[in-house]
Amino acid sequence: MRRRWLVATPVLLVAAAWLVVAWGRQGATGPAEAAALATADRGAEHVTLSLVSSVLAVAVALPAGVVVTRPRWRRLRGPALFVANLGQTVPTVAFLALMFTVTGLGWRTAVLALWAYSLLPVLRNTVAGLSGVDPAVVEAARGVGMSPGEVLARVELPLARPVIVAGVRTAVVVNVGTAALASFVGAGGLGDVIQIGINNQRDRILVVGAALTALLALAADWAVAALDAVARRQPYEAWRARRASSSAP
Image (cartoon, rainbow, N blue to C red; front, side):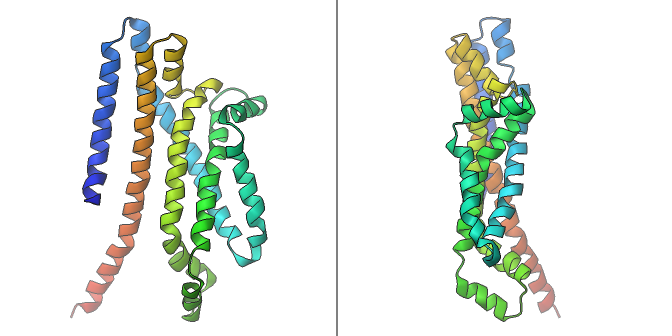
């Protein structure tokens, strides 16, 4: 059932996006509105903003979460979570305004703001997941001769994976929704469509931009879940292949 849902979800999302755009274009009253509803380029900008900032957030927060759960560096856990929490404590628009004063208008400002906004869910869930691993399991792994790196890679991270992935999914979904505000600093994205609808008091354009942003967030959540399903299945397939080869005459 889960596999069928993973396969059916992108088909449903693409169909829903096509229906939303078709509905919007059907109500366009002139060339200006038709141009505003040409969402392919803005959608690509939105995906790029969300993807780059999310990858950067995972690349920073995941290793940081691993480091602050090691016995030698546990005293840094509180400060690290405090720093990551600053990104979500400050309102997004205010953070964009602060970044604008440093880096100016454009794509870089939006990516840095979204990156800071995405750090906390990944870092917090990484810390929670690794801290929740049963110490007895870790001691048993050490008892069979595993090195600290092997314990982390083969025991702790696999056991903490569901919690860590939940944090990544939360960060990515929030990131896609927040990226709509990138239009305020000239970074493009589907926020431009929403802004055009607001400025021109055209509810149809506004609804199209908001609906496509929501569908893109659902697509991002599906993508992370699909990658997790593939990553989870590969070790099982490798184990089954080794078992088959060892039992062969």
